[in-house]
Image (cartoon, rainbow, N blue to C red; front, top):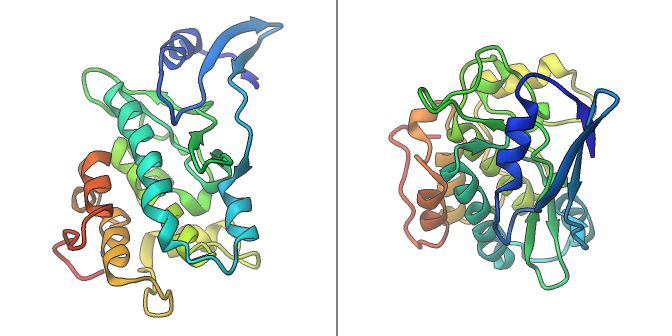
Length: 233
């Protein structure tokens, strides 16, 4: 893959290339040619999670959720511990292989966290709108809890087959407004209470009410009695 080169991009790519985790596609090498920056990536054979959702309409997805999202959370926990947030988590950036093992793709807009404040630059609003956290939409400083929000939205879509805020007939402004101001309607989602409570905590509009890290999120995912946010979702 390639993207325009920029300040410190070589340092960031070098850090990304050192990530080594079974659930993250490896970066083998990187180079700059004619002011374009190229990443040479591991090939992951399988289907993207959005295609998996589309093609398995009748499957009881809760049977697969712990396995698939346990792996997803393992991968992101590892990245976050290395001070990297993804910023564009969505089903199309997750590959499901034949053995149901997971590979996370596209750290192309991942941001190396500043060692002093653990936040990305204010005003950065990169990503895919229907999976963005409220603070990401507003261009505020973001940290790993923004990724946790996006994983929660992806889990909701995996279980229901639809995104809670996305619709083909809505403008970007309308989607942003819904994310910032409207709560998810869980009543028609047919999600079991244990998964519903886990998702509700992950996608709280207040990042301080979300899971503090992916390990906590994963532990609740495997718990029959997940922790609740302090306010009703």
